[in-house]
Length: 302
Image (cartoon, rainbow, N blue to C red; front, side, top):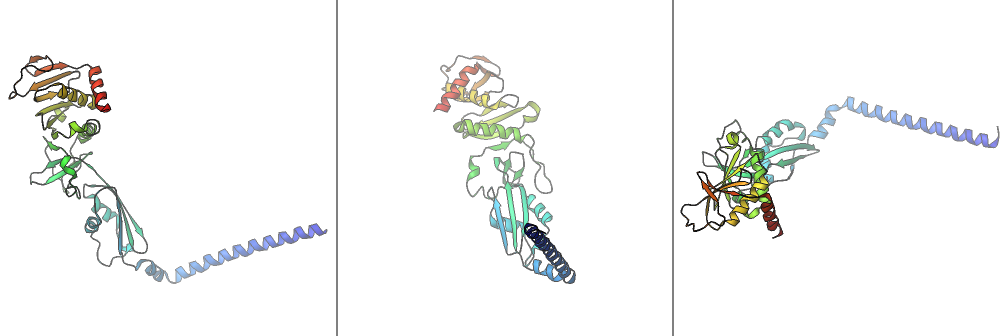
C-alpha cells in the first residue's frame, strides 16, 4: 500500500471509531435516563410539582386589573401548577362578559400565565334593578370593570327600546348590535362633534322596519335606515342641521336624498333657511348628493 493509501485508511478508521463511540454514548445516556425514571418516577414528579403557585402573571388589552383576575380565579391556598384544572379556570373567566377570550399557561415551577382579550363598550343601558351596564359591538352585556372609575362611559349613548332576557350568567346578547355599532363608529370617526350630542339610541323598530332612532341634545328624533349607507345619512343630517337656523324637532335621513324635517313647534319660524313643502310627515328637502359631498369635504378640511 502506498503512503497516501495508508493515510486515507487511517483517517477512515478514525472516523468510523469516532462515530461508533458517539453512538455508544448516546445509547448509554438513554438507558441511564430510562433506568432512573423507571426506578424513581414519584420522586421526579414531586421535584417538578411541589412548588406552590406564588405568582399570577396577567396581560390584558383592556381594563381588568391584577386584583380582579386573582379574585376571579380564586385559587386555593398552597396549590401547585400540576393540580390546576386550566379548562375549568378558563370557563370561570369567560363567565364574565368583559372577557372575550383568555389563555392560561403553566410556567414552571410556580407561575400561572393569564393572557386576556377584552370586549370594548359601544353603548350603555340601565337594567331594571338600577344597575348601569355596558354593551359591546357583538351585543354582549357586561358590568364594565374599570370603566366607571375612569369616566370613560360618560360619553357613550344610552340604549332604549330593547327587552333584556336573563340567562344563568347574566343577560342574553342584544341582537342587531353589530349594525348599531357601525352607525355609532362612523358618527364618532367622521362627525365627532355631532356624535357627542347623541344621548339615546332607540332600537324599538330595528327588527320590524330596519330603523334606528337617535335622540340628541338638540333634536328629539333622528331616524336612520339600516338599508342605506350610514356615512351618507350622517352627512345629510349634518347638512340639514347646519342649514336650518331654527330648532329642529325631528329629522328623517333614511329616505335617500329626500330628507324629512319637522320644526320645533315652540320655536318662532319666520322663514326657513330653505323653502320646503309641508305635508303630514313634515317638511321635505331634496338634498343632491353633490351638495352633501361638498358639505362633508368642507367639514373634513376644517
